Amino acid sequence: MSIGFRIHPRPARPPRSLVNRFRGVVCAHLSDNMSRLSGSDAGLSPWHRRGQLLGVALTVRVAPGDNLMVHKAIDVCEPGDVIVVDAGGHTSQAIIGEIMSSMAAARGCVGMVIDGAIRDAGALAAGTFPVYARGATHRGPYKNGPGEMNVPVNIGGMIVHPNDIIVGDEDGLVAVRPDEARELLAAARAWNDKEAAVLKAIRSRKPIDRAWVDRTLRERGCSGLD
Image (cartoon, rainbow, N blue to C red; front, side):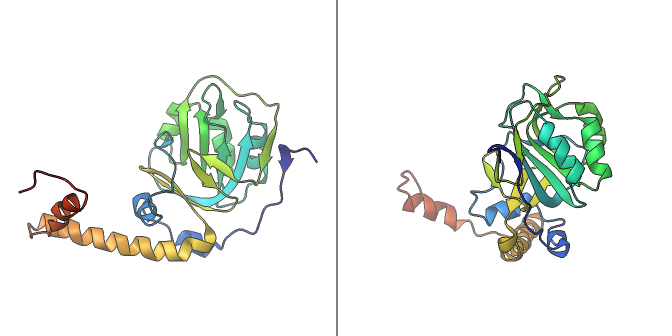
C-alpha cells in the first residue's frame, strides 16, 4: 500500500434513473435548498460552448501540475461518469486539453471538472463536451504522480465524494449525495415553481408583497425607515 498514491475501490454507483431526474434542474435551485452552503466557488467556470453537466463523480486527486492519475481515470471511466479532479487549484500547468477530453468523451464520460487549469481553450470553447476549470495555460502537465482515485476531493471549497451526482450550469457546480437526491430534487422543483410564479406576477404587473423587506430591516435594528 502506498498512501497518497493508490486507486481505491469504487462504491456502487447511483441508479441512472435517479441521476437523469436532475436533467434541466438549475444549480441555483439546488444550492438554495442546501442552505446555500454547498457548491463550488466562483473560481471554477465552464469552458465549453453550452449545455448542462450531469453525471456521477469519478474522483481524482493529483499533485499540482501532474495528470498521471487522470489518464488512468480516463481508462477506467464508465458511461455517465464525470471525471472530477482535485488539482489543488494550481494553474501553473494544464491538467487536460483537447486530446484528453476527447478520449474521455469517446469512453462515455459526460464531462470533466478540473480544480486547476486546462489548455486548448479555444477548441474546448467550440465544443459541447462540458469542461469546468479554474483557468487556462499553454504549459503542459507532468506525468510522475502521485495521485489517488475514488477518494473525497475538494473542488473549489466543495467536497465531492465518489459517485456524488454532479450538476453544472452557467452558474457553477453542485455535488449531490445520492442518499439526499430525492429530497433535494423535490425541494428544487418546488422552488422552481415558486420562482416561476413570482416572475409571472412581475411580467403581468401584478402587485407583489414586499413588506418583508422593511420588516426584516426593523428586526435587524435598521434606523431611518419611514
